[in-house]
Length: 65
Image (cartoon, rainbow, N blue to C red; front, top):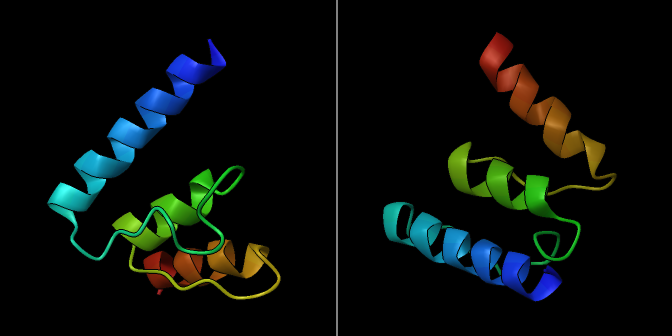
């Protein structure tokens, strides 16, 4: 089951890269437990900063302001 889920996520990354050329599933912070990092970077034009929660807050700020 885990191998199948990995295939699904790899396919999701390929589809995302087709729609959003700047999407990079290999960028630091987007792998393994970085699903939110990948989504924020790909779909919301956010940036990765430390601590990881700053991704969330910067993206949230863009939607509020």
